[in-house]
Length: 189
Image (cartoon, rainbow, N blue to C red; front, side):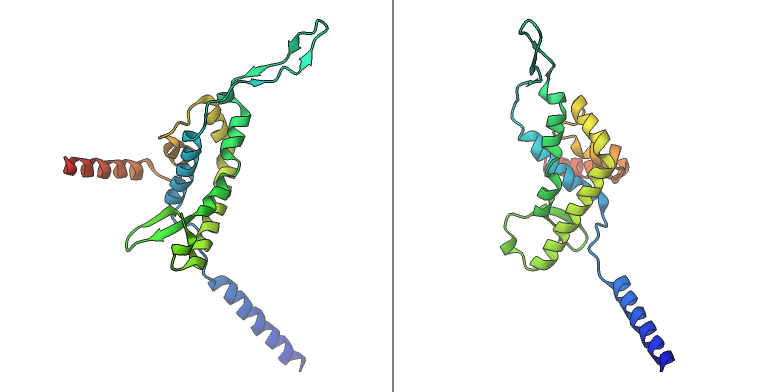
């Protein structure tokens, strides 16, 4: 009887393990496309920035009543970096994976009610949000420094984030995409 129970427990453990291993996962497989979606959302943040005054950190008075401290340019401040990156991954929950016959593209969803498979779409949105968290965890220090230096500009976020920092997109795949875009423009002319 003890042997029979241990054999049943072994079978049960086997089936639980099998279930865990074969469970379908919606992991982000095309990291380049996902990175470009994150870069696109960061570009939206950059382009919607409104001009800000310098940060006045002169809160102390000296013995003569003069203010002491620093005056920091907002564009090179840590505050700007925090405002750009804080909440970025939560915004990625508005994205889902659009699958065509040969391509997979991350798109921003305007209305979840219009989607046919909402459960799958929501699972993808959680996946890209998690991916964004890992991406920022890996690149945040370098990205923050580049933002403060002014090296991250609208139109160039994808190159900086996806090629230079994370290496999730190779330069050849981006160059090829640019060539394809150029060919399409030539055809239109």
